[in-house]
Each structure stands twice: as C-alpha cells, then as structure tokens.
Amino acid sequence: MSGLNPDFSADLGFLKLRNPVLAASGTFGYGLEFASFVDLDKLGGIIVKGLYFYPRPGNPPPRLVESPSGLINSVGLQGIGVHAFCEKILPQLEKIRTPIIINVCGEEDEEYAAVIDFLNKEERIAAFELNISCPNVKQNGLCPGLSAEATFSLVRLAKRTSRRPLITKLSPNVTNIVEIAKAAEEAGSDAVSLVNTFLALAVDVETRRPRLTNIFGGLSGPAIKPLALRMVYQAAAAVQIPVIGIGGIMTGRDALEFLIVGARAVEVGTANLVDPEATIRIIKEIEDYCREKKIMKVEDIVGTLKID
Amino acid sequence: MLKDARARIIHKESWKHYHLLSIETSPIAREAQPGQFLMVRVDSLPYPLLRRPFSIHARDKDTVHIFFAEAGVGTAILAGKGAGDSLDILGPLGKGFAVEKSLKGKTVFLAGGGRGIAPLYFLAQELRNRDIQPKLFYGGRTASDLPLLPKFEAAGFSILASTDNGSLGFKGFVSSLLKEELERLQPAHIYACGPEPMMKTIAACADTRNIPAQFSLEAIMGCGIGACWGCVRRIKRGDKAEWVKTCEDGPVFRSSEIVWQGEDS
Image (cartoon, rainbow over all chains, first blue to last red; front, side):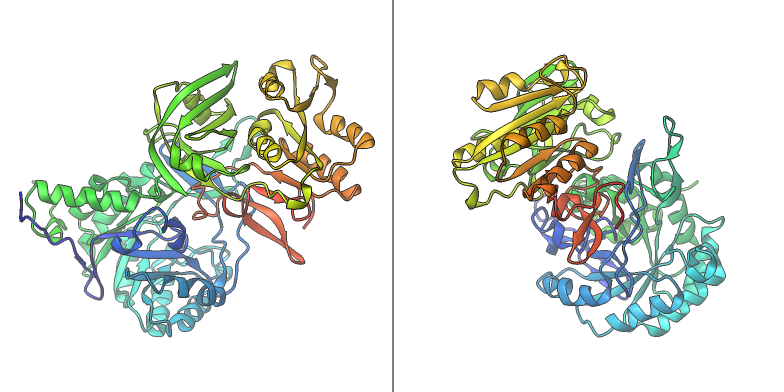
C-alpha cells in the first residue's frame, strides 16, 4: 500500500477544499471553540454560526431536548451580529488556513443583503451560505426556504449583493425539495447545501407541556440521515450546481453515502456536539476507505450510486 | 479542555440511586479546579446521543470523581457501569468557584441540596488547603438522600444535615438550616449548589446580609464547550440581562449576576 496517496480534495468549482468535510453552522461555534480538540487547518471548511446583522437574544431555555438518535434544538439563532463578529471573532480566525464560510441570516430579505454587504470587504471570508430557514417577519414568521418564489427572490438579491460565492442552505420542511433547489440554481446560487433541521416537537407527558419553551424545534442527528440522504439524492439529480450533503453524519461511512448519492462535499453538524473531534475522525475514515478500495480521487466517488 | 476517550473507572460506590465513580484520567485530573465539570459519554450508542455534564466531586493525583443520582436515560446507563469499564470524557470544563485571597483565615458556608452536594467536596478540600474554614450544610428529602454525609465527617469537615421529613438532622429545607446558622455566624462567603428554589432562597439571605455568594447552576447541555448555545441562563451583564452559556461562562455564577427563574429581567 506504500505510495498510495489519493487526492482527497473536493472541487466546488468556485472553491477548492482540501477534503470534502466542512463543519456545519450552529454546531461548531465560531470555530475557535474547537481549537483545543482539532487542528482547524485540517478541515475542508468551517461554516460559522449563523449571523444576523444585529445581535439576537435567542429563545428562552430549555433549548435542547433529545429524541432517539436525535437532538431537537430551539436556540433561536442567538448571535453577536456582524459588527461584533468583525471586531472580535474574525481577527482570531486570521491564522486558520481553512476556508471560512459565513452562514447568513435575516428577519427579512434586506437584512440578509445587509449582512452580505457588510462582510463583502472581509477578505478572510471564502463564501456565504444563505440560511433560508430563518423566520421572516414580513411573511408571518414563515421562512423563505418554504416556497420556490421566496427562495428565488432572496437568492437573487443575495447573489446580486455578494462579492463571494453563494451557497444556499435548503430547508427540508417542504413538499418538493427539487423545486426549491432549482429555484436557488435559477436565481444564481453557486451551490446548494441540504438539509437544515426538520421541524419537530417533543412533549412531556407528566406536565403535558412541550419540552421546548419555543414549542417547536429543529431535529438533527442520526435520526434524520435517511431523510436527508433521499433529499440530497433528489436535488443532486435535478441541478447542475454542486450539492453539499448535510444530515446526521456521524462517521466516514455516513459521509460516503452522501458522496455516493451525488454530494460533492458534506457538512458535519450534531456529531461535533457529541464528539468535538468528529470532523477529523470522519476525514480519516474517508481516507482509510479510499486507500482500502484503492480509490485515487475522492471525487471519483461522487454520484456513483448504482441502480439497476 | 481535553478529551480522554478511554478514561477507566477504577472504583464505584452506590447508595440506592446515588453513585460515586472514581475515574482514572491523569491529564484531566491535573487541570481540574473546584466547580468545573466533565462531559461524559455514557455509551457509544446513538441514544442517548449527547454527553452528560457532571461536576467534579473530588480530585486525586490521577483520578477525578463524579457523584450523581439516576435521573433519566443517561444517568441510568452510567449507573450500570462499574470498575474496569472505560468512559469517553471531556474536561475539565467551564469556570469553577472563585476563591479570593481575602478569605484566608475566615469561615465560609457551603450548602448542597441533594445531588448538588457533588462539587462541594472538591471545593471544601481546596478551601481547607488555603487555610479557609468551610462549614457545610447538606440537605435532602430523607436520610437516604444524604449518602455522602459520612464521607464529609470522616474527612473532618464541619457539616450539618437537614431532611424534609426530619429523619436525619434539622427538619426542613437546607436553606432554612443555613438561615438559622446565619443568625449566629456571619460567613465571609457562601457557596451553594442544589435545586433552583433552594439556591434562590440562599441568594436572598446572602444579599440581605451583604454576603457575597456563588452558585453552581445546572443546565441541559449540548456540547459543554460553548459551541451550541443550548445551555443558556439569564445573567446580568452591565445594566441588562442576557442569555449566557452555562457551560462556558459558568456553571458557577455570582449571586449578583444571576436572574433566578421566575424573576423578571
């Protein structure tokens, strides 16, 4: 096996990653929280916690409840806003060589655009990931990602504003994921990432109250992996732009499933909370698989699902 | 902050649904401070998915101890582990109890309710090492909820017990016992951990008498390292209150900064 040195890079067209594993937004803080557990330079990319233009208080606790093989959260995108991010966090990320991607949030389309406009000047930022699952104040709290029309107009505005590549992160809480993925592509998105969390509910039978103060939360973790995989497969078959797979990836083999159904890269989310070293372990497990199967390029795995 | 995926349980002691585990993990033990906690993965299966937080009960050269009550799925699985089993742990995490130099030679009160007694043994030892006299108050529902009482006594600590039903020591809440003692003796500081109403009562007593106090708060935690923002508490920062991460900015907070549950802010 000596000399077998496969190419693990993942080419998104607009961005070349040293490997296909990114840390998902909201599960990796601003990256720095993990510096004592993983070598951040070894990751494919880091997508920092969702940023609104203004600081956001987030939801009252309890914000977390476990379900079998899953986690339901209603953190409510608590965050520090773009000013504090640029002042306090970005300078600390200067030394990291891994691409930094900003997860962009907004209460209305104009706020998303304001975040992008404000951050365009920051050279450290490699791309924006548009979080279209934020409750919209002008749409009765519904998020843009639930309709193809709202997705199209938001992505178009974001794309026109952005001086960086744009990834649109899709919500799975839709009837037809293909329609939304296509709307993002038509509006000019450079890639789509999916899925965000599934809207979920947990009840305490003793008190007959919801377990989360916010009532609903987003389900993530291994419980959603088969659902996410199906959606990634459908989206990858329908759009030309790169697809990034997300949903319950805990191991290298989980990540490989997403690559096989057509994802060019993956995001690791909830696994980071369980094991802060998860990203590095998953990268190693993908590498071991490639060496074992004598696969010279990890990209050769993408979209190789065999269906008779 | 370290990860030890193979920390070995070397000793276990149990009292009904209470358990004390001694875990061999020298790097984590060396760094540990009183009031800090560990995140323990109780099993490698995907349910329960998340680690569980436990404050560090005691520390020897190469071992840390955790004391816990079976309260749900995670702690029930952990209760099934014993000497020879290994655990995947992160630690030491969070900000522990602050012990000011000015406390030297003085008496301080430590109050623990139920499993909230856990971090106070480590703290009491540390205080004694620094020539500060801890006086402990340990409360539970019944005598069987005070399994660590003999351990504190054997270690030579001054400790008073209370039970809700009077089966051992003072009859009533530990906060009432502490309040009675405050009539006799003014401590230089109060440290407490336990149910929210107990800590809230003690905070009010401390405030009335202008005694600085620190509380170790409990929260449902996701990651334990500040990444998920799942474990927040209402904490005063300057002139306003905000949701602050218990895992990173706590779990120990000063009474002057805590907004207790049910209070406005």
